[in-house]
Length: 237
Image (tube, rainbow, N blue to C red):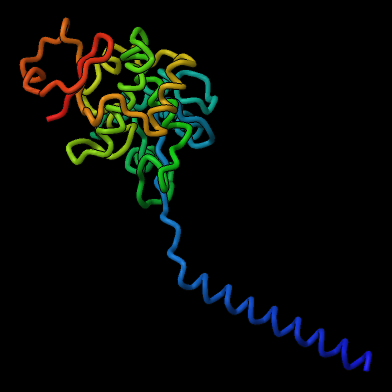
């Protein structure tokens, strides 16, 4: 009886394992493939892909800084110069096209601010940098508001669909033009970026902001003002 019982027990366990394995394989067959992502190299990025980009730019005579894997102002300037010389959009963002032009092969696919709402650390740094450059003298709510405007643009069909592309859109932010963007963001700006990414929008959906005391564009005054925070007014068309 003991041998028969043990044999029956082992047979049952084997059958159960085979059933579970078959179920797992069947389930995997019906799971959608993970969406491939396109890595991009831009301000605040760190890692081996940045290092490879710096190395290639250095070999081509564009980059003279340290190959340290940290995307800073020297890397940005070198990348823009390379893009301009090679007929690429000189936005300081190395996506698939620019990386391939540099001879750096990566996969292709879809790219956004994050899968299922999970924003990358690079996005936090980018957002904090534009907040610091544009609004470091503003009250905390006003700093979060600037971050919210960037995210509202990402969500809007009127603007590019990533934080990096919105920030580096030509002429979109004075802080990029006058290089205030390239200052190291403060802890306050980093926290404001995180709060904006977590969903706090003091502007209630605004996609524009400006300082009414210094704004010279006639067009910007055609935007209905919906909110005023600190020295900035916010609105959407």
